[in-house]
Length: 113
Image 1 (tube, one colour):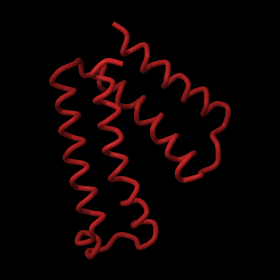
Image 2 (tube, rainbow, N blue to C red; image 1 turned 120 degrees about the horizontal axis):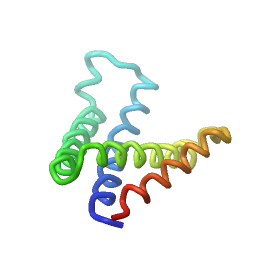
Image 3 (cartoon, rainbow, N blue to C red; image 1 turned 180 degrees about the vertical axis):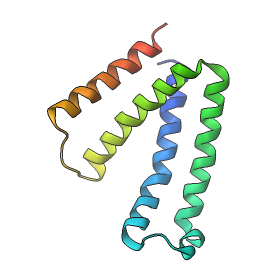
Image 4 (cartoon, one colour; image 1 turned 30 degrees about the vertical axis):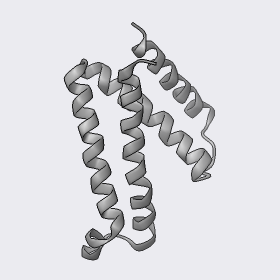
């Protein structure tokens, strides 16, 4: 796997690390002014900053269209894996799995030189 794909996957994983606790807190307690002083918000903010730094690195080293497609495909795959294996959400429809398969194929096609 080339360096660009690895960084795109790592960046998406960093985003997910901040999104999961934030979503859990917000679904349980909602959003109000005290939410911004809770530890989940600090974790969310730090992971966003690190993730955006990764995206900026990618944008400065590869074509924007390639990076946008890779980030989208990586996000689809990782979020579906998270939903299925960690959050135990119901499985996708047949069309959903076809779309997910196409996202996997697109990563291989985009990473090929």
